[in-house]
Length: 426
Image (cartoon, rainbow, N blue to C red):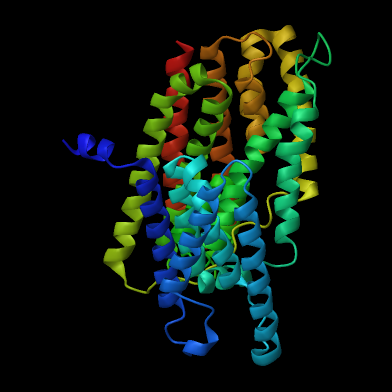
């Protein structure tokens, strides 16, 4: 019934109503936005913007083929807005032109409604409304940027959008079957996760407590976060929360590695999923235990915050990752040829004392025709070895009061990792 009624209404009337409605919404938002200012200081609100939209509609439908009336009207509107703008500068010494730009967008609603899908026009109107309302939020957000933030963003865009598409995806050698494209893709993938964690910490959760610091830091580097939290445990009053944060950083390591596996090799990711799910559940339960125990013992409030890591796109960091990636690519290929599965297992334990991401990413890209079960076991060995390293760092650098807690926590994860590896071995 409703569709039949709509079919009886001429399309031009529906489009006119849409233009009028969208223009009115923009005008009402302008009235609300400038409601505290003097009436004379405003360019216009609901009636003015609605009439601008209707004016654009009339001039557009006169000659939609040539657009001469519409362009002439646009020139006239622009001229009037320019006169108003320069008068505003001369009298009020204000240089904002947001309302004037919004007026021009309102004038352009008619051709948008006629030539573009309704959802796109609605999206444009919503963006106009939202951007007008979040002026103060954007200002506060921009204050968080330091001089290097846009350089960092530019670096990531160059890494992902400029260099990566230009690299060839052909193996550089029959002996070492990895291509420049896959090599750089690994850097982009790890940098992307690290950069996302960095942005969350700096802009979304700038005053995050110990627990959130451990979670976000773990997405960047669980080893680096463990070292920093262990050192800070000598200054922070909530030692059990520090233990929970360190364990959660390791929890996020499993999440990060699973996301990388999902991106590079879904079949390996599916085989890793049950083991990593157990690791995540067990480590989360350990962290929750210490949180509950600490909450029960004392109420000290959240400890002071600190930055768990610096900019993840530093040149030295990328250079080190690149060197390790190439080294492990060569080492894995050589050891696989000479010693087979046993050599990979030994290497997977050894790499735990370094950055395990380059080694694991080499395995995920499956360049040496290694069986998936062998790769899964090697990944489990690597994370177990890395957990052992973090336990050593933790008990060496932390306050004495939490050393036994770290030993028990990491000990459980290490034993669990060895059991998982044993299951895959047989």
